[in-house]
Length: 286
Image 1 (cartoon, helix red, strand yellow):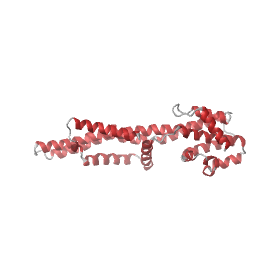
Image 2: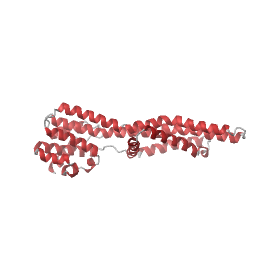
Image 3: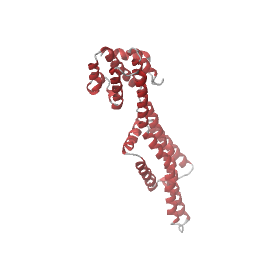
Image 4: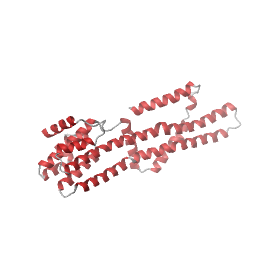
C-alpha cells in the first residue's frame, strides 16, 4: 500500500508542478516513447536474466507491493513450532520425531501452524536441521557453520531479483536518451517545417529523456529497494530458527532455546517474553 501511495504522491507532485508552471499535460502523452523505453527495458531484462530470475522478480515486486514481511504473530508461530519440535526431540523416541520431520505436510505439529507451512523452503530448512540434531553425532559448531552457509546461499538467491531490477533502473536513463535521439532524428526529418511543428517534435523527443529518468529514479529504483528490504526481513526467520536450534544443541532446555531465537528478532517485531511463554504453553498443551 505504501508503494502505491508513494507513487501517487510522486506522480501527482511532478505532473502537478509541471501544470502549475504552465506546462501542457497533453505534450507528455507520447505512447511510442513508452513503447521504445519500456520495450527496450523489458528486452534487455530478458536478455540479462534466466527465466527463473524473471519470474522471481515479478514475485518480488508483488511481495514488495503487499509488504509481505513477517509480523510479530508470524514470529510467535515460528517459535511455537520450534518449541513443539524441540519438546518432541527431548521427550519422544527418535522414530516418532522422524515421522514429523520426514512428512511435515502430514504432521500434526506442523499443521498447527499453517502460516509457517506456506513457506516450503523455510519448513525444509527446519526439518533438515532437526534431522541432523536427532542423528546425534553432529557437533553444534559444525551445524551452525553449515546453517550460516545455507542462509547466505538462500540470501544470495533471494537478492537476484533485487539486482536484476536495479540493473533495469540503472539502464532506464540511457534508454530514455535512446528514445530522445530517435525523436530528434524524426524532428530533423521535418527541419523545413514551421517552428511550431518543429518545436512540437523536439518537445516530444525530450519526453523520452524525462520518462527514462523518471521511471528509473521514481518507479523501478524504489521498487527494487523495497524488494531488498522485504526479502532481507524475510531472511530474519532463518536466523531465528538457527539460533533456537543451536541453543538446544548446546544443551539449553526448549523454553530457554526459544529466548535465543526471540532475541534474534528485530526490536520492532520482537514479541515479548510473556507472549512467547504463552505461545509455548499453548504448544505444550496441544
